[in-house]
Amino acid sequence: MENKKEFRNWLDAHQLEHPIVIAGPCSAETEGQVLKIAHELKDTDVTYLRAGIWKPRTRPGNFEGVGAMGLKWLQKAKAETGLLTATEVANRAHVELALEHDIDLLWIGARSTVSPFIVQEIADALQGTDKVVLVKNPVNPDLALWIGAVERLHTANIKKLGVIHRGFSTYDKSKYRNNPEWQIAVDFQTKYPDIPLICDPSHITGKRDMILEVSQTALDLNFDGLMIETHYDPDNAWSDAAQQVTPTALMQIFKDLRIRKEQDDEAGYQSKLGVLRAQIDVIDNSIIKTLGKRMKTADAIGALKKERNVAILQSKRWNEILGKMILDGQEHGLSEEFILRVFKAVHQESIIHQEKVINN
Image (tube, rainbow, N blue to C red; front, side, top):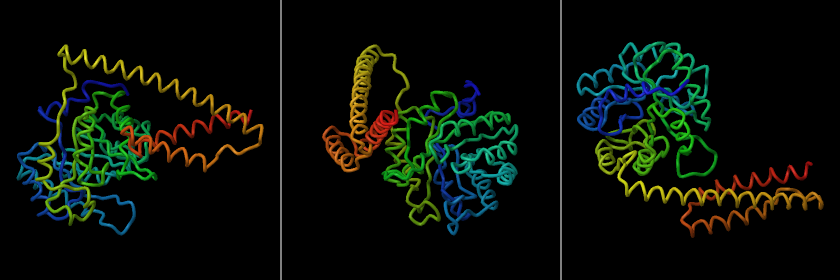
């Protein structure tokens, strides 16, 4: 699948002067709830009213959605407010019901994207549709799987495509519910710059007080829009209460966000930017050279361990290094999370180098 300018046509057709916004409750709970939220979002920057009808929960026993009757509530909300409608689909039956109720935008969730079987079933059910279809990244950080899901839809002659970045599951301790792993979204954007890219800060953060921060990062990275879960009484929501914001809070987020220009041709700006980028290039080159020197030292350590028949992994030494680096990093404005990720990668590469020396 090649990038095409036409991928943006559905987004450009909205003629918005701001990033596109999809907002609404995590789950449709009652008709009154859906209508109340819709009316509070009317005449704002929101274009699509979202609501989960079928909720694929991690474990059974939790609220799993009201089912098809919620689609009628979305229809009514659209008739009363003019907002376009959006919901998640996970199988052919969902697709058929959503199309029957004229839902404007459908998205494939992260748990579905991981399965080519599920994506293909949905693609077959949507063959040739003129609805907008968005694909959330898979729960695991796998760019090829994400692209593959979009390709299946494209092969099914679906023209109005886009993707949603909602972060990735991790066992590591993190301030995020799902680690953003921004580089994966940037890699997708680099390969397909004209496929609209939407950020879901609600699922990335899992906490409403971090939504502005993550939304701003997304816009700084030139994302095309945001999907934010919104509820008039989020603390008592039937699902994902902690990550939903009120319509009033959502409006404040819109006010606080800074939408930056992708380019500025002003000569002074370009000159300063060129200098700073050149400095970055020099620093990056220095980092590569330093890492190369470190690995040569790791090779020497591997040779010494081989000679003395000593185990490669020395846990005490590793923990001492990590503790020291975290403290040193803090003095240079680097977060503990960043230091852990960098030095775990460096340590792993060092082990690989030592293993090669010992096994040769």
